[in-house]
Length: 252
Image 1 (spheres, rainbow, N blue to C red):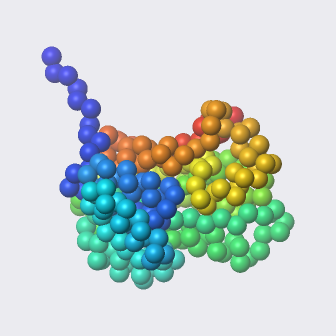
Image 2: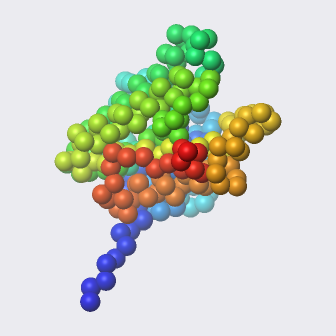
Image 3: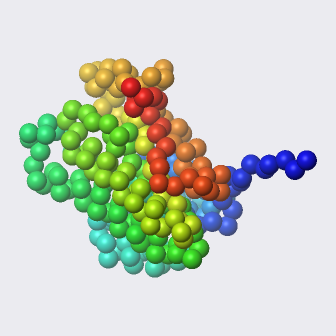
């Protein structure tokens, strides 16, 4: 009898770029990939933060390097990927939000959020895919549960994350013949330094708790396993879809 074997979750010999990888969810993803054996390039805008993240990972024995990168500068993105050389995995955790009632949304707010959440995400994926042609690879966008539902005061954010879900499906269809997989991870509210003010607001916290069906809020560690799955051969037939790490928020 020939027993089936579980595909490996290991990433030994793989090269990964994690954009927005110096803190929060992005940092968790960078650590998850490095723990599995990948060489991880941590890219972010803040020199101090990105170097601190890489130093901490290196002290843990992981293979990693730092790259300063503003994802809204498309020329800088192309130049950086030329320096990176061939990569196997892209995780894009760069994102922005400016919440307000839809009637009060300004063009500046709309453009600022769209520039990072849609435009930068689109061309990051395109740039990575060009390197993956003929080799295959995995592109992972950190999207949001708000790419599947709506929420008051979040019209712009929801619009951009719904766009990420749509372009992910289309890119997966186009690049599938090249064995390039494109997927999203859609977290609920994850407790980080960035989201702490939201969790500290009693009204917002009550709303979050009422929506999450499990008896706790999300942690960075909850995203790490999903990222490793999508980056590894364990998800070799998974593309054009999203993993909702939302505690049941979108279930109903």
